[in-house]
Structures are given as structure tokens and as C-alpha cells.
Amino acid sequence: MSDTASPARPGAGPWPMITLIVIVLAAIAVGWTYFALAGRQPQLPGQPFWTGRKSADWDGNIRFEQTGFSQMNVQLVLGSTLHFTNPTHQPLDLDIVTWQGQKAATLKIPAGGSADWKPAQDGIYEYYDAQTTQFGTFHVPGSGSAKVQQVVAAKGAPHFPAPAYGVVAVTDAAGGGVPLSAKPEMTVPGGTMTYVPFVLVVKAGQTIHLTDNDGMDHSFYPGNYPVMFDDHGQIRFYHDAFRGFTMHKNGGKAEFTFYRPGLHHILCTIHSYPWRHTYRSHHFYGGYPYVMDALVLVEPAA
Image (tube, rainbow, N blue to C red):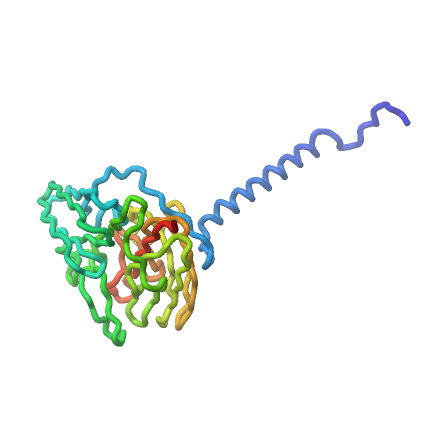
């Protein structure tokens, strides 16, 4: 057996190696693209949803932006103070209520001014511009005996049906202290275009049961983001904020589990969309007054 080099074959040379390298690089690119896009795909019911990031550029102030507020989701430790600023040229009447509607505070903030609010007890609150937004138990025609308790844009408001509001969860230092909901269940009643209850408090790892009793499909999309969109109806992904699924009409059921504690805003992206620091109902549903949103506060499991 000769140990001399074999004669070169026609077409032999560096090209097979280059072709192999190109194939490997293409495979890596395809794989990277797949995993990048997979992070934006709707999450399957029952799978864990990881969230809980905080806005890195938040300076602690909540600025009124006329159509809404610079921060819609805030988690505050009891004993801390929330700072509101009004950089507009109009005075701001700011109402703060519990999520059931009990008045907690009223702040009158002059144009260019600011005001502080220190919660007296833990819980979940909503703050809103009282000139354009209101809170009340409202009976929706055609919904039977169902009533809704949440904020809604006032009829005749300049940006109707977009309410100017935000939410704050006041917890202990560990992220708990707010009483848990009696049942980890959320439904969509027929004819209301809302989630019931508006607020759900669960432990991390606890399964949430969802039922769509409406005659239309609705989506369940969680996020812990500040609403900073100005997209005129075109939903843009805010990091990995939008991960959810669609619930089917007429009794469709689903399950969902949060594993990281925090305050999560739920939005039905079929019937509402982010718009100028707030949410707004799609006009092609008749300017329906309620933004189809809800809140889930996830407390530590331990």
C-alpha cells in the first residue's frame, strides 16, 4: 500500500469545504431565525409565562400625557409614595379608587405641577383623569343582568373610547399581602366585552381557568409593559410582552399559569389595542365604551 499522495481528482480543491461551511452557516441562520420568531408566537395554554421586568428608564414619576399616563402598570411597596406630574398646559383632576370603585384619593394637579400619593393600605388601585374618564357599575344593554366595574371613557371625551388611566398594585416588600381571589377563574360574559373579574390575585404557579361565554372569540394577552405605543391601531411587539392565545366563543375554555410574581395587564387584542399611552376599543365594533382589559396580580408562591 503506497504512502504517496493520491493524484488529484478533476474538480477537487477547496470548493467542497467552502460549500460545507456555507451549508453550516445557513443552518445556523435558519435555526436562529426560528428561535427568534418562536419567542413572538402565541403561547399555548397551560405553559408558564415568565415576566416581571421593570422599565429601566422609569424615574419614579408618572407623567400625565393627556391621552394617558406614562406608566400604566406600577407595583409599589406599602409605605412608599407615588409621584404624579402634569407637564401639560391644563389642570389635572386625578381620581384614585380601589379596583371595586371605592374612592382612595383625589389630587388636583395644576398645569406644570405635581402631587404625591401615599397609599394607606395594600390592594389594587386605578388612577384616572376625572375629566375624560369615569368609574362606575354600568349595565350594558343586551348583557342580561351582567354589570361591569371598571374605568371607561366618558361619553363626549375628546379621545373617546380611550380612557386615560393606570393601575398600581400596593404590596408588601415580598410582593404579597393582597388577599387572594376566592377562585382562580376569569370569564368573558356574553355582551359585555370585558373580563370578569377585572382583577384576579393568584399565587405563582397557580393555574388560572378561563371561559369565554360570549358569542365571539376573545384573546388573552398578558404584558407587564408601560404602554408607550403611538401606532394608530397597529400592534407592535414590545419585547416579549404579547404572548397569549385565543379563547373560542360560546363556552370555550383555556388554562394559563404565571410563574414569576408581578402585576400583569391582560388585553384582548381582537377588540382593543394600545394607543397613545392607553388602550382603545376598535371603532369597527361601534366604539364600544369598555376597553377589554383586566389585571392579574401574581404573588410569590412561598
